[in-house]
Image 1 (cartoon, rainbow, N blue to C red):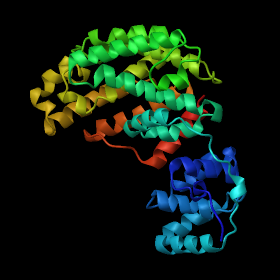
Image 2 (image 1 turned 120 degrees about the vertical axis):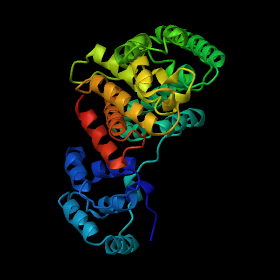
Image 3 (image 1 turned 90 degrees about the horizontal axis):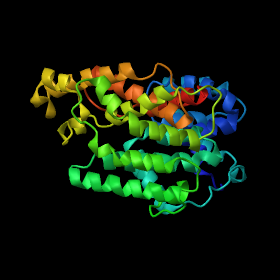
Length: 352
């Protein structure tokens, strides 16, 4: 019967969003996402089938297909298979993606494994900025890992020094790391970022309270905010720089949980919480869950009320807010649902 481009089946959040735009136009995204939230047993297969079965230009069919799936999932999926057997194939609607840099892609995949929400967020980034969005996320992951997630303090210091030297090279038009191929030619204060990372190893990892923990990270967070202002286009709303800096610092602290509690720096958890919950909170159990609930509550309360910054930061802050809210409720980590993440990314994109 012919060939069909994989995107058309809408089996991933990224492909679903692309199909929604292709079939109904970006103006209908919110309407479609609201309808998909009504699915009683949502997974990629049924959500993809609903979008796939909806006729191009007939967004009103989404509601009927959601109702059909809720009335009988098996029957609806069987109908989808029968439709696929007879529907005409239109491969000419799609254009192959440009060739990619395999080394850069490997670092992006590594970063998105830790932050799967960002794979969805990148869908909202304009095509010409997508590669920078991905490479920047991968660089931030490498920097965070070097500064906060290595068990040997001497190795961490050496790696931060290496990155400081590397970023200085980017400011002079040379690079060694594969991510430099995607980023070094962009006009941005790379030297300032490198110098700030050289100081990260000396940051106080035993803060007295949440404000001290956030404030200790303000220097490197501001350097990151300055890079994002240079890399990404200006939005329609003014950026509150101090709020962005606070969001970045809180993101680093949130990403340490819960594994960071057992690390050499104890995840930068404030002393008052350590005193309240005791050393037993380092190990999984009721004490750790209670500490995580308290720490997540304090961090979440200090996130800016409104997402601000460039698209990358608005999305990341929205995702951090959801992660911290879940941790504050349950005392346990966990990945948010893909559909909820898609909705948050869409709202963050609209906020710019």
